[in-house]
Image 1 (cartoon, rainbow, N blue to C red):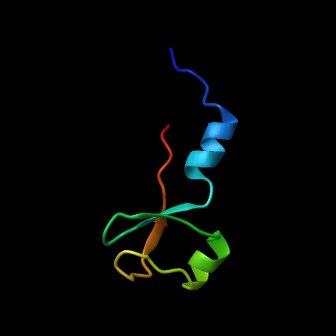
Image 2: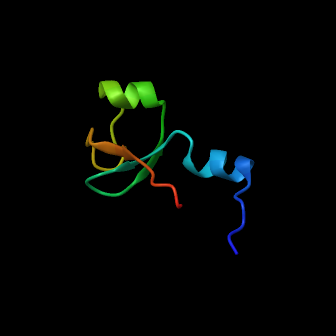
Length: 56
C-alpha cells in the first residue's frame, strides 16, 4: 500500500532544488535564473543544472 506524500515535505525537498550535472551538488535557486544560466554550482562552477528527480 502506497502512502500519500505530505505536501509540506514535498515542497521542502523538491521545490526550487537543482542538482549539478558535473559534481552532483544540490543547489536551491530560482528556476527562472537557472534557465537563463545565471546560477552556477558553488562547488565546481558549472552552469549545467537539472531539477531534482521526484519519486513516483
